[in-house]
Length: 198
Image (cartoon, rainbow, N blue to C red; front, side, top):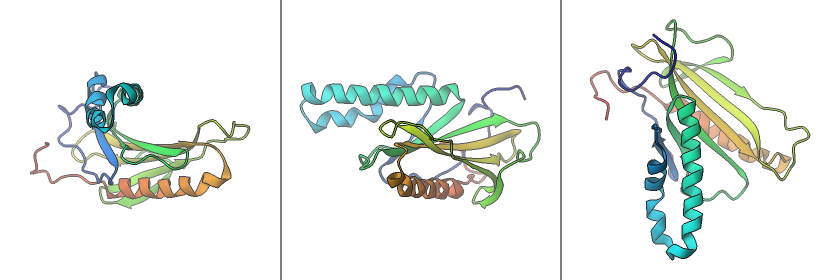
């Protein structure tokens, strides 16, 4: 199979996954601005248009940028918290992608975990934040799970990044988000072959 994204037209089915309350699963497309507008369209009912309009437009631009980055990384969906404002400056997002594989085996490295979707390679990294400005957002942790897609010459990759202010007081929040992300990824599974994709 040629390199690049494994598209929906090629794969037999996509995985199922749980989206917690306050989170959203957003599809990635070639043009994401309209998707971002639809995600925040109900926000226009929350106040006077002249006062909330600039804020909503900033949210739309931010989300479109996130989805464009995901598109450029060959992802087909992004899962992220949107419903409740964070009380601390630490947040996360999960991206899902399918990539061609030369063989139906997990890549080397990391730790093999048993998940609802079968064995997965798990890799967790913590980039150094030494010397980082405590008032600026930094990448604090990444979590990556990789599965062999059933019946396909492809791998499914679930990648999460956790970013925030690099201060010790927020480490418990990073740990809690890591636990939630890993629980979500380990609960991901494949629909029965008889089910049609929605």
